[in-house]
Length: 452
Image 1: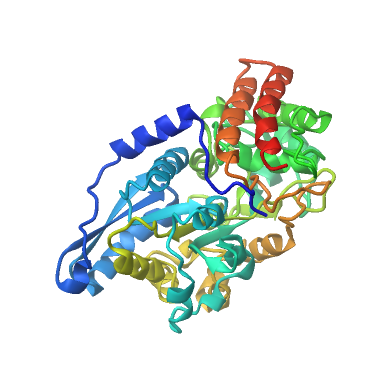
Image 2: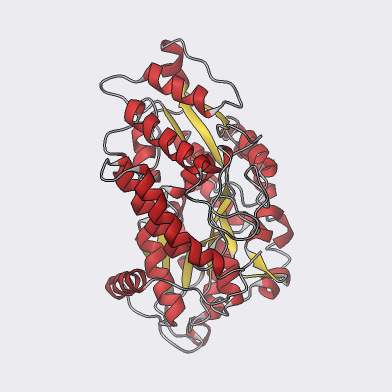
């Protein structure tokens, strides 16, 4: 369910920061006209996040460029928060710096409804070789609005618990396939040593950083951002219990300075055996099991921990979209199709490694024998969790929006970012939990009232 308000709003400070980031991004605006189709050279500027699968795409882009003389794809790789700020500023303002953008399931339907993205429905459906129906339906639906598809999933994910089996076995610790958060906290405390955290969790401020896992923790503890009437409930006892639990677990068993950690930092910690466990995006499993991973074959995987709900995983996809301001629409769509095609998945497997194939996007990927073998440790649980979570009601109580680790209203990006900074301050002992939640409640309430 989208908000009745269609225009994305950012606080003045957030928009100013986003504009500055966009202005400072490297690369030139693509040339105009019909581009390579008329014999001209075309540069496609692609903004993306610095995750492993996107770096693989950059590594393989030469294959596309060789097959399409005159087209150069310029990757502008950023950290997650910087990417969101830069892309939001560019697309919302119509500046036209990017021809292709990497955006999440949160932004895609809203931006499509605003007219900021090219409608990809017909270009995808009219190409039988692309096979749009092969895209996993839950993910495809999440990036559509009013029956129109505005992006294509590069990879999809839920969240799972990842743990080093050797470390836990040495400590005599076992975990169930569907653990509780208390079970995980106890295990983390038992395996923690002076040189290794028992668990690594995101603490870096940002609605897509800290709040990605923390919102699911809040939901399984019985809380949520809003009730069924769009009244903010951030100052509820359930929120306080969940946030205090999160901080206590990190204080007792987590990594040092957790507010500097997000996805990539925790990934490195697990690979280097500086942490024994990590609850985060399921796509991380493919990186932990990659041929160059020092913990390949050592890892175990379980459902995201719960308290009061049956599941607590999220549902997310990183997607490639084409801003409506691009002057190279045809070439941009063509690259997007190439980078999300069956052939691309085959290319990744053959050139980089089968465990590196982007997961959670295409059903056919899970039918490739080489991928089935390489991803045997994590592919089944990824599909199981993705099909088990309920984005219409992920928590204990009904909610008036569709989404798990985010609220699908335009205001949430700004509210979530500001609230994440408040909670990070609490985790870093710079404020109290009561003060952080009270201030966050004050930020969330006007956004909820705007939907009433």
